[in-house]
Image 1 (cartoon, one colour):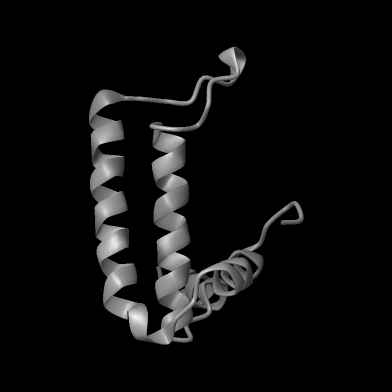
Image 2: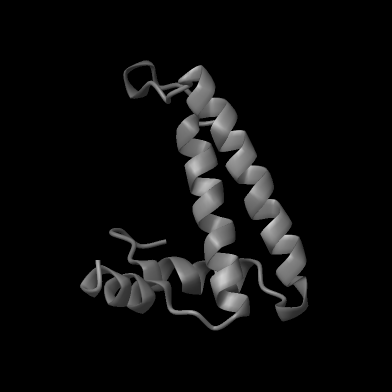
Amino acid sequence: MKKPVTLKDLQAYVKDKKYNRKHNQKYFLKLIEEVGELAEMIKDDNRWETTKAKDIKNTMEEELADVLFYLAALANVYDVDLEASFLKKEKIR
């Protein structure tokens, strides 16, 4: 992926990598699973230590990335433009 990554870029990447309109329930369940894993990382405050060049595996950063991936997958299934939706929502906050 090119840097920096926009939400549109992310959705296009996820759609290209993992997309099947019929897998809406699967993507939702994976999202919930990843949110649960994120909760564990938050509880343990398990952060990625960049100064030690630690692998991202089993860290809060990994779980946040996983949540974002499956959120984008679900948005793709329902043809939701996350970037446009976010901007519209921010206008009414």
